[in-house]
Image (tube, chains in turn red, cyan):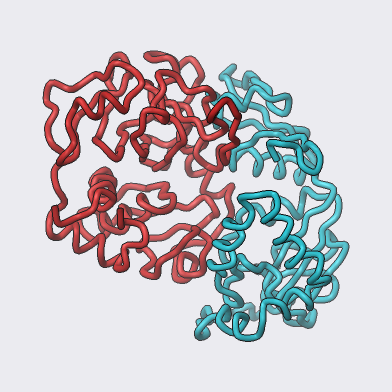
Amino acid sequence: MDYTLKELMVVAAAREIRDGEIVFVGMRLPLLGFAVAKELHAPRAVGLFENGVVRDWPALAPIFTMSDPPNICRSLSCGGLIDVMSLLQSGRVDLGFIGGGEIDRFGNLNTHWVEENGRRVRLPGSGGAADIASLAGRCIVIMNHERRRFPPKVRFITSPGYGEGRGWREGKNLKGGGPARAITSLGIFSFDSESREMILSSFHPGVSIEEIQRETGWPLKVSDEVRETRSPSVEELAAVRKYDPKGVWTNN
Amino acid sequence: MEEGIPRPLEVEEHSNFTIALALQAAGMGLPYLPTRTALGSDFSCGPHFSSIACPFTGEKLLAVRAVAPDVAILHVQRADSEGNAHLWGNLGVTREAAYAAKRVILTCEELVDHEMILGDPNRTLVPGFLVSHVVHARFGSHPSPTQGYARRDDEFYFDYHRQSRSLEGFQEWLRKWVFEAGDHEGYLELLGKERREKLKPGDELFSPAVNFSV
């Protein structure tokens, strides 16, 4: 393979963004994904950052946080957190990217605490993730795929997916559409429109379905049309490397 | 924090949006604000949230209790000696915090004349009558950036993350950067001239002037 796993994940994230969409971007891989989408198939997409920044072109300089000066300079608009969260709450945001410490079969995410060797380990909490998961038109989850991160039921719901399955979000009066896709380090999942359960739709090159099952804490549902994840094209890879020339985010 | 060192802290869980609304409510003089976020999140079971019905439609919403901090410490680009503050770049919850807090301590990169403030009133996002103290502190947001004045000191964050993994490492970090530094001047001296120079933005990029003429 002439690309890294993270480059594949960035490209998969980029493919989720349609032209003209309003996107709650986040940092690291989704930020690069936004840059790649803007460069190739979604030139009119707009990126929102929860610190209040709105951008219609991605910052070229590498950044570690959304408040780093290159992300502010020549942005479209600089407001406050409530401004961008209001766009989210009023249904104007098409999609948002989030990650998590744990994810379960209905796409619920936990970033509050986990147990390791019988000890409770504190995680960062919500940040903006619960807001994006509650309110974005659709939500794309990016995860490292390890069995300990994929329990059948998360211990704590920070960012709601489909809760306990069909009808749960409606019962909570959650206006956002919920998780549409989970892009993991092993494959890509969609969510069943009836049961709302995670379904494997593609496995990354070199990864077997058996391996994905081993790293998943419940009996895996596999799509009838499951296939290998499409490798990044030459154009997609060039776009990733334009924005991450040193591989800060995409070296394995 | 998990181990209660040096003493346990009481924690109220919020999302970014709910803490912003909690501050906004206090700043507006309200006991709470309603929202649609976090309706399915486990942290919204806390006592500072309450499930409510909209009085007009009956729709289910989440009420977020107001938070009025005892003190807010805000760093801005420039302020006059009365605390009238010009700030720009991403605003986060700066305004909400200034309006919600019982006391505001303002630190600024530049202390400017009152005339400069009057020249660009849309940029005065914190009025001085909300501010109790003004401190002139160059690099006052270090290691975080201040647009137009300081870049982010990535190395400083990496070092802190490395050292704060153990209690001893954290105490060593505190000893060096807080206790022995003494005050802000001592801290800047410890940082060193070379490092401070590297943190300054490479060039100037001014916004276009706007016309306020009568």
